[in-house]
Image (cartoon, rainbow, N blue to C red; front, side):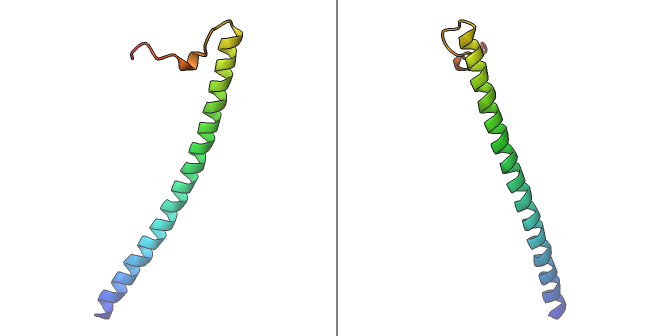
Length: 68
């Protein structure tokens, strides 16, 4: 019985460590995604400004791709 309990405690400890590691990965990826979204928004804003400055009547970012 104590061997079984010890084995279960070891498994729980491993699972807790894995959970902590995966939580860190999710947090890091969430931060990277947020940065990428901010950068994309800046790029789209600059693209829209350039399109408008070039004489466009509306930003190219509002245009649907040809395959739609």
